[in-house]
Amino acid sequence: MLTNLADILRRAGLRVLEQPGWKTRGH
Image (cartoon, rainbow, N blue to C red; front, top):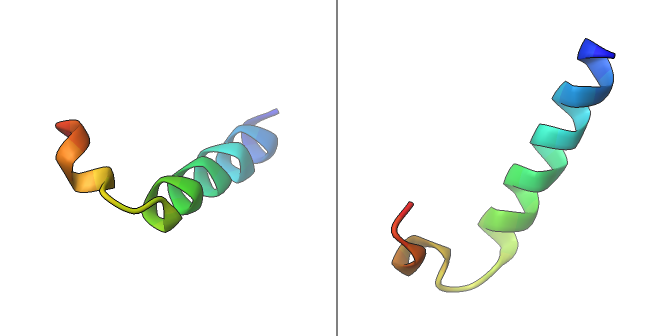
């Protein structure tokens, strides 16, 4: 489960980084 969560978090992070203007979201 921990490994799956890590993969999901990494994928989510990558998606956020890929999205343009993610810095303006407040994070």
